[in-house]
Length: 554
Image (cartoon, rainbow, N blue to C red; front, side):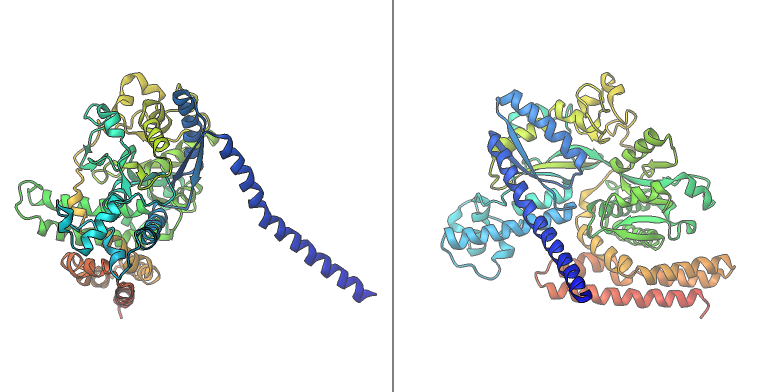
């Protein structure tokens, strides 16, 4: 009887688990059905892919639906696609267009797909003759893609940086929406300048457009700083190498986070400019920038390395550093401004706490555009144009920067981003803005971003930070801790020799990066990239272990 009772209990448990699994499996189909009903009731549909969080999606859904109905008399269903961060989105789009174009080439055009076409159709370096009859086979592939309407199944890219958007535009994944022809007055110095502080705010072909502007900075917990004996507040990128911050810096993985990679790029730009000022030069007065770029590269690697050595972790979540620093789990971190400013206000309003702070590093950052773009083959191009028109109108722009409850502002949470339109920075709207003192058009400062400096190193920088500082973080942190201990014990010569060994970057010098490493990373041979990754990771692990031994006097 006991065995039967046990058998009944076991079977009941299995049946219960089965029913739960069945419920989980069927639930999405129930909601999908309801979702289709909602779409069927709407007159129009818009499909948007975005890295933006729920507050932004909510406010722009609400605002656009109302604006669209008032303008057209039609309802619209906004179908959001959220895959993760910008890098995941761009990888997804690249894969979608690769599959779509191969299908178009082989099934619609009935042509043979051959090796090399995968790289050719998105290769912006392929120059097309003015006369298409002069095209060679590779040029024909590229021209066919650019003339096609192959689709990813998505209308709008909403979010991401201008560099990544520029790459997508160069590939051919982005197309002009027509907004520049519809509202030419918006794309002027009086409304949305093309360039601010060296950063581009829109593409001159209209393939991507800045919607809001962001900067990168340092987040910190004032209570945690006091406990560490750091009685000031970090104001410069160089402040993050302070030995008291060992194990206290919250960082994002540059492979996953585009924002993290932009921070490291800003450090490179700043170090180049520092070198030029030391030599009494500037980017215009020196005929050859190579020496400055090479020296700036070496200096920035030394800075980035020690910031990483002080890091507690490298997360794939851009919000985790903000949450951990605000909770005091980490003393400092790196963040894009809207996350930092949002959390600063959130803590102040909810708990009347001033423990969390955000600061733009002096002379170390410039505004960058957060973009919107129409994707090639957009299923709903007219609705896509309407969304871009709304998002760039003053009505849409107010959602970014106004306080909750102000005329035209958000209704739930302040988004705390700086709108791109100059018109909202006049005195009339001062009291409405969430960050009234933040005005990049007034406060660009003496840091000027030079995209041409970063072009050769932007992709290699992300890769090298990953293999030399992130994947080797255990060995790097141990070596840096040994150097800190040697200094504390008065063994300064050991510490110096160890630091010199730690920061020997001859294998990834500027010359090697823009020549050999960049070429290998651009290769379609995945195995070659993996071999490079493995060899560099092994090299730096050995180097850091040797530096640790030197610091310990071995």
